[in-house]
Length: 313
Image (cartoon, rainbow, N blue to C red):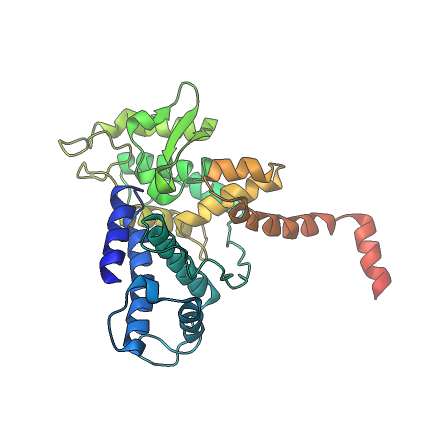
């Protein structure tokens, strides 16, 4: 099965343009499964040997031991991801004519607990975006950082999407941003007034850092190369920490804040789904739980709500 696994991973890279991170995760999940079932069988196995029972037994073992046979229960999220990887692998084998049907298709994943995003408040985000120049920043770096932060919050981009932007991704005149999301899916996101101003200010000085290696990258590092993920994370961490945010001081918190604040101001789920580039509405629905807390907090200020609470005492 290892040969089929290698073929599948190559297919994901060359044909479906799946991200390297996702390919590594898929490969790791499926290889662990192959190693365990072949260890129990005492020999190499072909895909048509695998049954529903093998997969159920393997998923059950994840609640007990790790690959070194040490007690190590895994999270439901990990178990769910493993099942998704196995389903995708066996679907590929069916598509390739290796199997007539997938032994994993009928298995339902574990119920996932809802983990609410740790999202900064509007005031905390504004303090981050409007911060004065930090000691570590010079004027050009400050303008680049302003633009990066505005894009992360103003348009709700993933950090990988933001640093992948090129100059031609921007249409400042019309106020649109062309974003290449997961699975090479393109979407168009509006640019707000503050975001537009920050981007224009950065573009006006970007040439100061341009080198032969800059290409069309929008966000550059001081050496002229495209800004990398590690440095972008550090930009956000420093700014949010300076604004007094000790928890959730990472780029994805700004994306969560974008979605949460949009919902709190009346945006519907379908609109937020399109803006965030989610493939499924269920991914976006986590924000309904966030805003329920907001609605309760607002409602608690209502005079009759307070009276109702008092009547229970």
